Image 1 (cartoon, protein in one colour):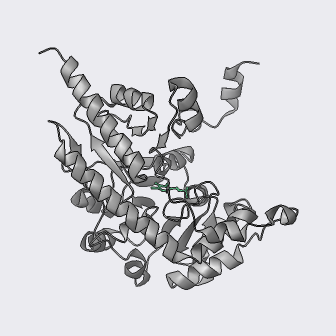
Image 2 (image 1 turned 120 degrees about the vertical axis):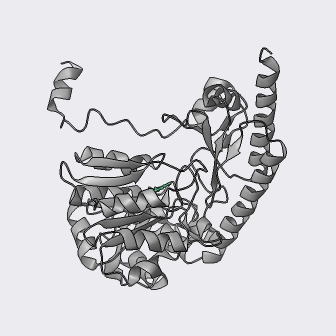
Length: 382
Ligand SMILES: *Cc1c(COP(=O)(O)O)cnc(C)c1O
């Protein structure tokens, strides 16, 4: 059998999809580059990890793995609803918030439906709609590496079926502030589903002016869903738990029809509930990360070279224009054992996204980057 036989079996939307770029594993960097010390700064993970309450909640786990998990995730949904000021029926949980993005596309999109997204943006905001045959309306950034609010308002007025708004943006880190968010709402026709992807909410809420999207949306007579995750600020990326607060229980029930019944496994539900119960741990970790991010920006600005630009960030990462192709810089960083995400999209080949890690990792990154750039400049023929 040949690959083309397989390809003939595929839906026409599937073959053109790019495989998700999940980056290099620590193992691979160790073996291919001979690096001994690895700094993982490519996936926006939380180096503080999860609350110790998680380890405690998971003791004896092996003894209760023979039962199916609660398909309704009721304890976790109740806890989330309570703190977010929603009804449990408005809460959907997923195997990561990416699972909920997929459910939304499965439940809502038919070929030809229009979906509004940002580029550069979160890959799955494009991949899942394309998988369903939807047409993308793609918005760019302003020259200052910010959201283009006017362009967003115009595009929203054209009534896409779904608008995916990552606030703050991944990979850029820019945000719509409260006033901008109100303008977005005012510009959106009542038939458009607003998906507000707040994967970095726990960091962004510390940024002056960050909107209380749930409060702003609550008074709206329109469909919306706010997505958040336990993967970033809560330090549980390995377990895969995300949640959404929807305008209506009817939307959650729609998603229930397309999700796999046991989409969030038992350890994940238990761990998320335990983490959720120790908000103070999350608050400390995220506040420290924001301080580390500010320190990184200050240090980069101290050594700034011509062409270096740092996008303003409300999240736990920085999007950096190196003013030179990212490929060679990335290779040199890997040789130092430092894993970042070099951006590949047209127009952004000079950018890397670097997660804010622990001070020793950030320091290793900053020192290596400075050394690599000086070396490249010294090697340049004049
Ligand atoms: C990380 C991320 C997610 C997905 O996180 P999960 O691990 O699937 O919960 C969703 N949206 C954005 C913008 C992200 O950066």
